[in-house]
Length: 311
Image 1: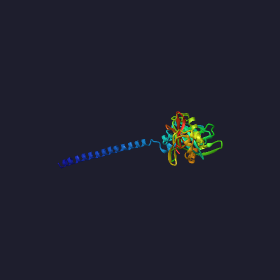
Image 2 (image 1 turned 180 degrees about the vertical axis):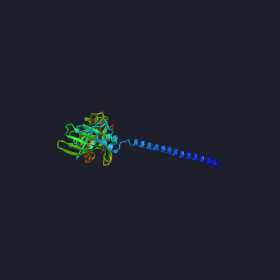
Image 3 (image 1 turned 90 degrees about the vertical axis):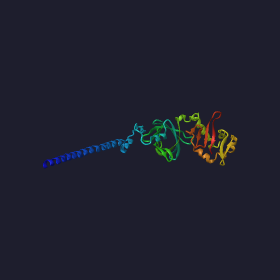
Image 4 (image 1 turned 60 degrees about the vertical axis):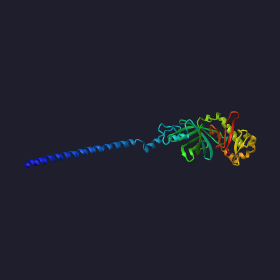
């Protein structure tokens, strides 16, 4: 009897132990499987994030930009690196961008028209006797670089585009002249832009570019050579000027000539002597000469006339 009672006690205990052991093993197995899922997902997510090109791959892509057999940059089909929008805005597409600066010690201006990656440019100076130099070339947006060559191949401008410098949007590099084997550093800063090709750069003035710039040359020549009467005849009266820090109105050419020395001072004359008469800034108000010292426009009954002198 005692033996039977012991069996009734031992058997349930054994069954209970087996159930507990089974539960522990099953729990560990499930926990192990559940813990492995986030780890796999984490690896997969990390791999997807690392699909962005690493620095070495990006650098290799940049160095592999193709060039033509002539050495001129060829625009790659690869995605442009850096802030492409800012770079392209320095020489905007379908726009004439006008730059001011220097090649070595010589002050120059350069107007560049861009059509896609193709560039058409004109190099000019403030000296009216210097001829314009026409250049052709390309823009490589991947490397932020450009190359311009004169029609006879004697002059090249090769450099890079630098947006938002302390002096503004700039073109910098070296100009080479095969005639004297010289190589000179240049720095050009974006001055203004005109939304048209070179030959139609004054759309709001309703006049040919040659007529606009010939009038600008006439203004500058009369000031440089003190041709007072000729200069006075180019003005639309009445006109406001500053004399002794006071604004006064001049009503005729005779009155202007009488006050000429008070208006066209040596300082004003020096500013105009360094001004360009080509590729001038213009808007709906007319055309600006220098840094705003003179404004002129086309009047229906008189043709071109000066309407503002900021002396």
